[in-house]
Image 1 (cartoon, rainbow, N blue to C red):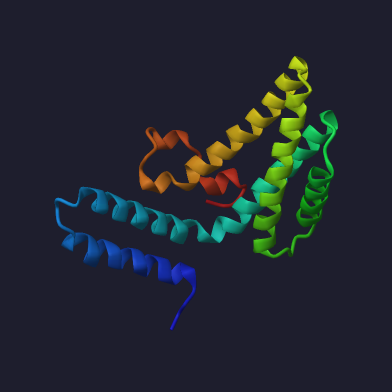
Image 2: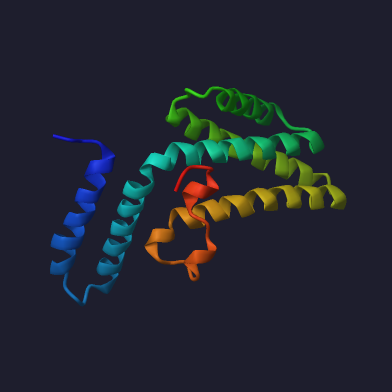
Length: 173
């Protein structure tokens, strides 16, 4: 039996689409919509699963750069300093466990939030503007990545305007 997600996810999606969805009562519109949403996410996971590591590593690299830029203009606390150091160590280790990337990214998000809060607490308008610009630049790229990731679900108007996730991550389409 094959238990790898790249094989199981399409099978589960097809079963839900072909067997479960047709027997749902037409009056159960919310259930139908939720099932279609779940099917869509299963399809995205199956389609993009091979890129998950690259997606997570890309986010960690960019978040580390943001944290370092913030730490240059805001005095960080011990937790944010440790989070940045851990993130740099993971970024430098090509063979790192994918779960470690996710864990370190979560810790770094907390560190970045702390740096932002400490910066804003200083009440310096110029510093606030710099922080705003750094966070906005990071968020803009992350939003582009997230939009491309869920593109197959069809929520995006003008899908052609969103570059494919593979090209955004520097992978072959």
